[in-house]
Length: 189
Ligand code: FES
Ligand code: FES
Image 1 (cartoon, rainbow, N blue to C red):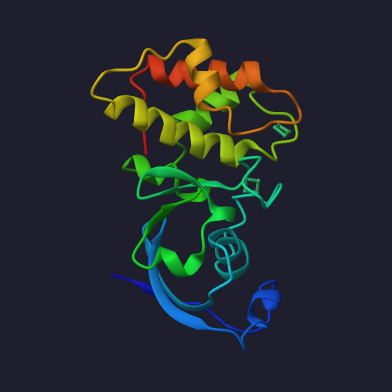
Image 2 (cartoon, rainbow, N blue to C red):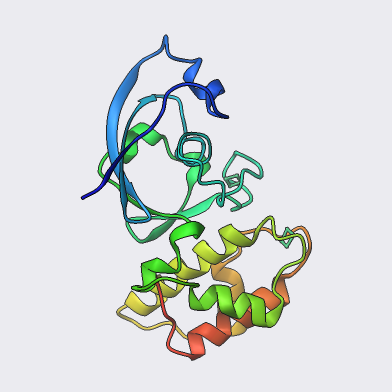
């Protein structure tokens, strides 16, 4: 399996690297199917590692406090706020960001949710969109795996995505897009 070494100098991750006097550990994780090994400061979040260390800027930093959902990624197939996770705790994790969402369904190209968002024009500025997409993918997987079954009504989808804020107010179209995918079989990550 291909391994990528992560450079430790220069780039936008300088702020992360300048904390090198504190405790660091070496970790390995898979992101979008690629293996990465790096040494991380114990205070660095998964979001900062993704954005500044790996150059994967799809996950956005909105609040950096677990309140907006802009940083949502999938960890082990479950949605998570990357700003709340310490990178050092993700040793061995399988992470999917919006950059890898399409290939997570088994092939290259866009994820059905991405196509549905385009069809439904489910965004304005797009800042929240990567998080909305990852959250929706995780939510559909949760619903599909619920042994009691989940009736994904409009209200249910809105409630299950309520952790992802959209200050442009694109909520109705986001829900439309997710319902389209759910009705089509709910392809999930
Ligand atoms: S940036 Fe993580 S929840 Fe807002
Ligand atoms: S599309 Fe602008 S914040 Fe959601």
